[in-house]
Amino acid sequence: MRMKLVPNLQEQVASHLRLRILSGQLAPGTPFREQVLAEEFGVSRGPIRDALLTLTKEGLLHGRPNVGVRVAAAPSPFKRAVIVNLRREIEGAALARWFQTRDAALLERLDANLAEYQRACAASEFGRVVELDMAFHRLLVESAEDGSLVDVWLPVILRMFLRYSRHRMLVESYQEHAAVVAAMHAGDEAGAIALLRAHIV
Image (tube, rainbow, N blue to C red; front, top):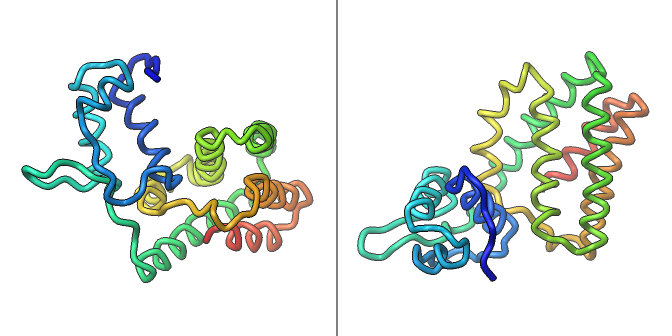
């Protein structure tokens, strides 16, 4: 099925492929062929080539001369543990920072995200679930220090495959997010941070 994309084409293609990789829909070692992707997305090979280059720079793809581009290997258990700890520290710090101001605007955005997240889970829209999952965590990180932590956080999360397989149902991921936000609404800083850290695995 051909997708309909709008400018910026390269960013649109990269976004679609990034979600597939991070969610585990594309296994490590899966090859990417420019012509096949160009036909799928209904664009020329130029935007495809640029998108693959972007994802390679992000560490999601691995390219070798005369071999092509493939999905990069998942991080080793040791590396994943380091990544998980980094994410917990960054996002936990951002959440702690929010409790200093308790800006209601962030709660409104998180509530809106949760409503759409719950709907996507119920409809088994896996791609949308991944997108909303990342958006939820990005909202938390962006809320601290005028978003200055995003540049630190983004390379970390892009090297981490999201583990939905640990849930019996997609809605369990939504429930973990909702518990964090409920603690924020209740003013429970320690509880919110503990729930967030437990969610990041």
